[in-house]
Length: 114
Length: 112
Image (cartoon, rainbow over all chains, first blue to last red):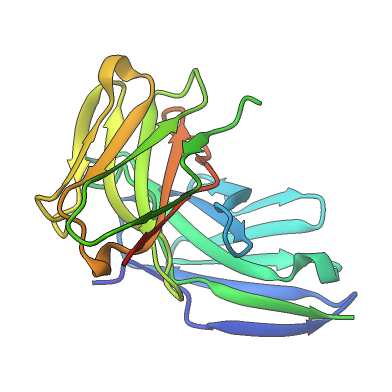
């Protein structure tokens, strides 16, 4: 039972354009959502997070949108840069027993083409 | 360096041997997690500590895996009688109660 789903294994975007990465979740106990970026042979690097009391959080070129009714969140990167090429993971956690862990999706590999 | 530190970075072991990994979290973080990641997959939850108490453990985790966090500081993950299927990247992360989690660089285990 995959509670966090990233349905696009890969995405290619031209440099300077917008990258939109999507994530869906099924567990209603989740109330905190995070995006991580990962390069090969390294640990995930935290990018941005959002609490369920908000629907948008912005940090520089990165914006995360949360649609609670649809159980959907997305990460927007504007403008995309070649250095953004990496695997992006969506993660979620909650406050109830059994949901303290971070549950990850399978990731989306972003390629930004110069 | 005040980030999460994991040792060793790489470990090659023969099948059937025991291995132990260490994680030093960010000092003020009370929550510590162990994850395992294989190629093409997201990090898979193994176990979670709040201070020194192990509060959650994956139902998929074999009895060959054990973790400790004495005194709520560093943590160790031991795998007994390693199998080739244990080959993976083992990740440690720490966080304060309900904030972002920070990961270490991981320990790459290869069982031959």
